[in-house]
Length: 359
Image (tube, rainbow, N blue to C red; front, side, top):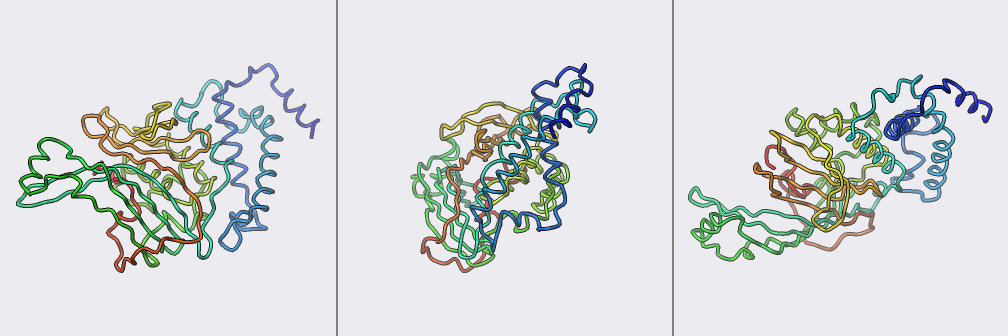
């Protein structure tokens, strides 16, 4: 192996070493190629998932072997980047692509929360803004509240949802006047706090078949749009990517490919380090329309997780936000009253607006 590596290093020794961005891009493409290698002995993720749960010992063994492969092949992969068709120094990736490639590497090497097993639920805690709209005589009263949200989702769609509202306020003097005309003078009166349990099918993940998705970023982008729906626009595809990251048991390999898919969407721009509404700092990207941001995603550069989202109005001001606080697998749900009917689309699975037509 050492002789072979020496031969690789000697090949085209007169060519300057690639810069850091090119190295990151080449390494990400190499790891993606390794991840796509066919495995006939076991189905996709079978080494990570057993009986719909996670085997910690097996997970550690597989992760260690993957890191050994990376260290042994990274040098050779960068050296032969030009031969294999990776980006060269003369055609470096954009700043957005380079940052997303680096974030993808972080995400791909993180421990996986895992798929909930029998009797288990994926628990996600978040907080953000929500709105209460009241209509009467052709007029509307809009009250904005800060909402603490907890959701428990099983693979069959059963689970629970608890939302606690606070800090109610009128969104403008005009709204306050409209609300007063409808006899709503206290924003706190629109508090709709409460918890419910849901039967099978009441809640949902973006998909229950992660192995059917590709780790090729362009292919994956088309797949998530097909499954998530919405108009065939760049704005909606940005929303689709976000939908697959929040309140989801997305595996590391798919999360990594979703990051690499973001630069493929026209209108996505790199914002750099940003502080989310809870004071945490992360790397932010946003979708722009008509020169203004409409939807922003902030990622944790240490864990590869989605930290927060922000939505902007037509004037470029933040209109809504959501921050994701915690996620883990648990073995039970609170004994809230059972919701007998399926919630309206988006109510139980969408913490903030997810359609580009309603930012």
